[in-house]
Amino acid sequence: MRLQPYVRVDDVAFTASPRDVVARFGIPVREQCNPVALHELDYGRVVYRFQASGRLEEVTQRTSVLYVVDADVVRDVPFAVLADFVRAQDARAFQRGGFLISPRYGLAFVPAEPDWVTALAAHCIETWRALQAG
Image (cartoon, one colour):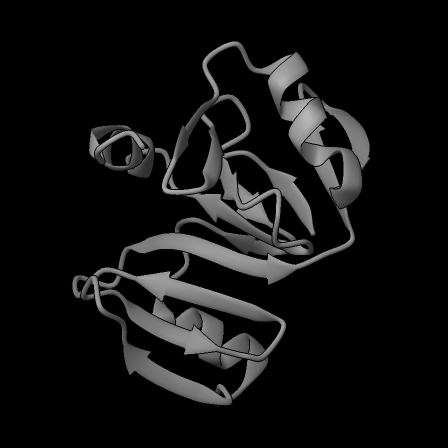
């Protein structure tokens, strides 16, 4: 996964619509509305989640290495050390429901469940922050 926080995941910008994603990748393996009312386009190793309005909320992808584009510098971060990296580089990082959330990098993941990383749209951070800590 190549992440430019809040801007794009790989070649898909956070301005993409469901139609844009389907035009680029074809019909998903599964399409559904998830329990929090987000429209999911599931391609197996990557899931795109949209609000009913069509706004892209998050992209979850299996990846053993996260490539973070930060101020035009690309950092390659193996998933095995991603939690340590986030804690060292993002003083505003916090945990909710087993997820480690990084406002600096716009991502959420469960350190104990390797390989899945979720890139978040900027407006999603406060939603995560508002969840009950614990």
